[in-house]
Amino acid sequence: MGDGATFFGLPVADLGTIPNALSIARGISGPVLAAAVLADAPAGLVLVGVTAAGLSDWLDGYLEWPDHSFPSMLIMTLAKILPGHGRSSSSLA
Image (cartoon, rainbow, N blue to C red; front, side, top):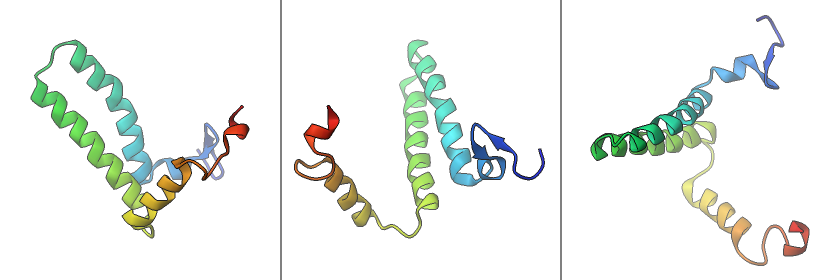
């Protein structure tokens, strides 16, 4: 594809990183898991798939943001969702 090639606005070189590959695989696994549930697949199989998706989400975040510790990410997340922090209710209208 050459230098500077993009795919949906993302540099093609960035699509091949491990965190992005995990995210793409997890995005594909969602409909597959939904189809498995609808097809009455064994619960253990679905549980393994959901667990793998959760672990890949954790690994994706760990690889993408290695300098952030869990406590700091938790505090930043809570600060955004607690009342009186982050967006005011008037900005949501």
